[in-house]
Length: 65
Image 1 (cartoon, helix red, strand yellow):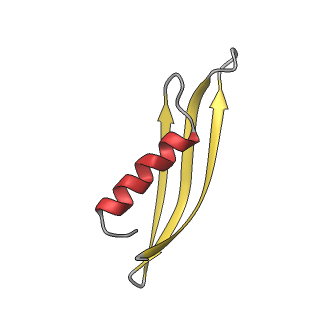
Image 2 (tube, helix red, strand yellow; image 1 turned 135 degrees about the vertical axis):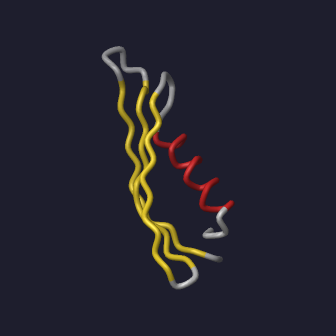
């Protein structure tokens, strides 16, 4: 385990009930340092899990997770 991830997700829908917004904010503690992040995604059928996947991908590529 390289780092510890802390965060909060959320999603939003349009007036039809279709998911159109997702977000994930938080921080990761890794290698004695703390890094904050925020990610939002917008578009039809996008939600918090999509924002989380983007953050996970970036943090893993940076060697923080």
